[in-house]
Image (tube, rainbow, N blue to C red; front, side):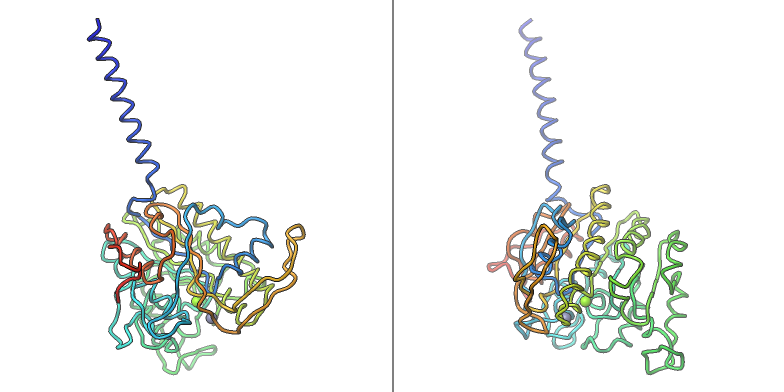
Length: 381
Ligand code: MG
Ligand code: ZN
């Protein structure tokens, strides 16, 4: 009789251990390798930009992230970086000189997160509100020694193997002879792009093209209209990109950029910083909805650098108003920028990290590798 009781007890114990193991596994999502990665970059987005957005909105989607930290942004040759060098660090895990796009200072190409993703059969996509040839997206898709070479960047994008390409910059894809061209040669890259994937040139035609596994949407000659003047949100573009990319059962890597937070900061324009910030936050919300329901998606939100040296001097929480701001510069600053993470491997993004280490962790997680700790937590060059 007592041995039967023991048996029942040990069976209960066994079941309890099993339950505990399941619970532990479930709670340990922060340490698993991701199936998908969604990296959201707020260009120029410092702590003050986020604060201004929060004052205006009350609550941001950014507040739903369980992990946060700070990122140092200096480039290989300057304390104050710009988008090309900063995006190179995030896209390749290596620092380079200002203006270089995913190449070392000696022009050696650096393998990108997207190239690593394609190696393991994953789809890749970018959704930006700038030209797709602009520095931030360019560093994920191309390799050039200077970000100004946007005509060359467009050519490399066409041949990059990108699956979803949404943003502006149509002018760099049409031949010089045609109106609105920003090229100096007669290459018709729109035709080349269309031979590889469905091509959309107006936001009105977006929904009709969500069935396939690829899409190029070049929705403006240069940058997209500012959020305040646009009748479609970055969230809508992000949802469409995810809808298409998630058809690949091997997974995907998507970069979403709120490109124009930076531009508003250069113009010392607080109202537009807020509207760009909120547009970016809607996209973050859309991506987070997907990540939460999908369960295997690592989401990271950060900035390439701070812009404007922005400070908030007065306003009202009740009235959701920022009434006094100051900018210390019309350019960028070296201030650290925030980082937020959700999902498998998210725990790796807490504390103070260097931007190149952020890129290295993303690449390592894609390859199901841990990133070795470094003495000062900086990625080795
Ligand atoms: Mg940018
Ligand atoms: Zn800038």
